[in-house]
Structures are given as C-alpha cells and as structure tokens.
Image (cartoon, rainbow, N blue to C red; front, side, top):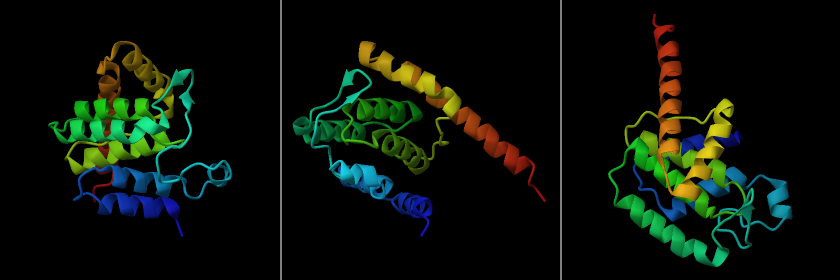
Length: 174
C-alpha cells in the first residue's frame, strides 16, 4: 500500500474537521509509524515526546510542558482569523515547541499545507533551495519573536507554487 497516498487521502478527508491536537497526533503517527529507527529508539509515535530534545543548539519545550503548551497554542490558533500570516505564525510557534521526539518539521509542514487548503488559501511547499532561509526565520523568531521572515518566505513559496500551477494549467489546455 502506498503510504504517501494514504496520508494524502487522510489529510484531505479531514478538511471539514478543525485542527486539533488529536488530528496532529494522527498526522505524526501516519508520517512516522513506518520508521524503524524511531521505534528502536523508543520514540512515542503519534504521541508527544517523552524525552527532552534540542533543535540545533536550541532547547525545546520540556516533555512535561508539551500538553499545556499545545493547549495554549491550539486555543490561540482557534481564536485567530486564519490567513497565510497566521499559518506562518502558528508554524513558528509549533516548531519552537517541538512537541514530538522527531518528525516535527514534516508534521508541521503537512499542517501548513492542510490549513492553507482548508481555509481557501493557496498552499505552499518549502523548497530545498530555500531551506537556509527557512531555518534563519526560526532563528529570528527565537531571538526577536519576529514572524515577518517566515511570513515573507511563506508568501514567496506560495507565489512559486501558484506560478507552477499556472504553468501546468496553461500548457495542458485542450
């Protein structure tokens, strides 16, 4: 069975549902359940981390604090008017918490894509060529709580995605 297709189908089938912690955990489970190393290392697949971890040299939310911090994040998000800028800010906050032992980035980017689709916003994909800019946006957020670099990157990636879609649409008209 094609795992990527199943994940895509599941993600699309959840569009009528609000974003919840349980849904995020389901996405994490689907992304990480087939990774032998994660199971061998005792990682909680589909559940919040059980051990402290770091991203680069940055400490993340302690395991005991993850449920409370995720509750706060979800409450904040549910009280926002959803826009590309809001989704970028959610992504920064989510990744800074780093609620899972591993797979936070993949899960976070899946959430970004889903939330764009769910809210009739042109989606985006962070391209490898912009990875440095993506990482730098997290640094700026951690140092200054400035969300603009990520918002600007999301806008640029959204523009690139739209341009690609237009290319295929315009060149496949019959």
